[in-house]
Length: 615
Image (cartoon, rainbow, N blue to C red; front, side):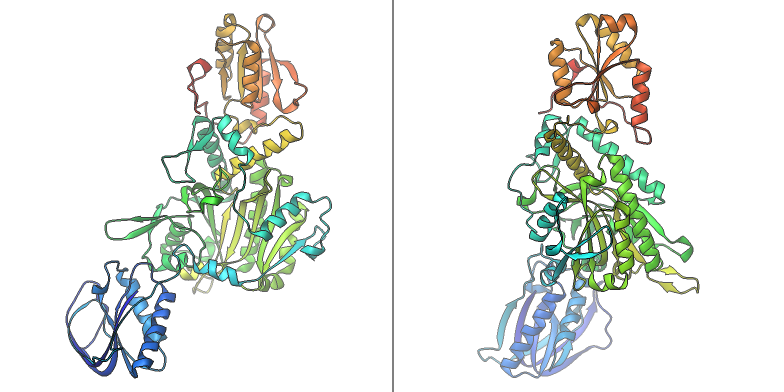
């Protein structure tokens, strides 16, 4: 914000013509004598805090020069980086209302005006000031978070809330790692986590040097896994009762409602310039879904109302030191569901149901409750008023839960849970989450008509039943590494394995037969290793690709009509589990393992000799 401060004998102005952004004004103008005139230009990035700081600066100068009257005069010519007209008017009004102890006048915004001014000419009669806000990446919520004190507890399976330093972590090593990570709040990465090597070796994904940090490239196998997860989580949310929608990925920074939301949400924004406005890339589906709900006609009969979108992509400009592999990205895919509820009781019931939905979703993805730790974040007031409900969450998984309790609310929610995966480097990353939002319905003017015909603001739940899709892949790869450390063979769930069956002919003589077998396996992703390599190398390569089922075919298999199949899930690093089964038996086994999951065909040529290598 730019200020030009003139201590004047008088200022006299007359309105001439209203522009299309003019605020309502009655009269022709006014004359104010013995006045400090504050010519003011509101700039992009200015907010209420900047306006209040400007008001304090104006007060200080007025006291120094002995002025009893102040004129706030909009003057766009002080800056080439002007804010939107709506924001300018709002902040000029904030300046006007924030000045105390003086007679305050304000010239109307958006009018062509003629004015006369008589400057007094003493050393302090002409001053300029520039008022800057905090770094644009530091939001009000983040600043508030620094001031709010957290209290840490463990909620035990028998529903006792124990101060964290008094809890016995014996037998709960992973929970201890998670608690230490959360309390330390150190997010920087010191080493490369194992999943990065896996995502490259398996030819799933890699860094894209031509893009910004935290933006990945996905090869055919990685895109397949990602697509299957996207389809599955979307299917789970729709089955739960959500209506799928689609909203824009960019929004105006000058939209008054969105601007206030951004000030409350601690996300680092990607900013892009349009023809006349600046836009930010969304970091969640909240904006579009809330604006959609604001325009909708909703009654109590429609509640709970659930709306879902798979945001491919969401964007957060995370710090470079925190970016690594698929764990933390700047561009990511977030399944995002929002639920409108009529009251807190309905909100709590939805929260509990979505807690169970998240457990079920992760389990079907391949992440069991023992693979992650639970965190509850809650305000002290909400906890005291809903203690029995908060304690009931421990009944679902019957394991200790980390509780962070705030002495006051600084986000838009009063209660939140997260399922956090602790990786091989003892870094924790949130997967599923649900939040009870108590302020955005009012901010976005979302209402429903109650039984009495009156309008009310609902409570809103934010839910991601799986967390970011990329982070699910990260967790599966990290889990595979930790399983390998225990002597097991690393693998993905069969329904997510790019190749589910690899058929290996013992020699070139049996390639055609292998192809015939592959063609019989409808509904299975199957390929054939027809390369001119030894049988041993082909089997090793298939194992390195984590193929769940490796079927070898030779003279015996052709003559007897069966396959010799190595089953990865039943093998170890020391011993391979091989069984004989028919094509039909193998197909049926895979179908049973993948029941209820989406299926997509193999995204690569069936013959390995026809495939490129992505490295």
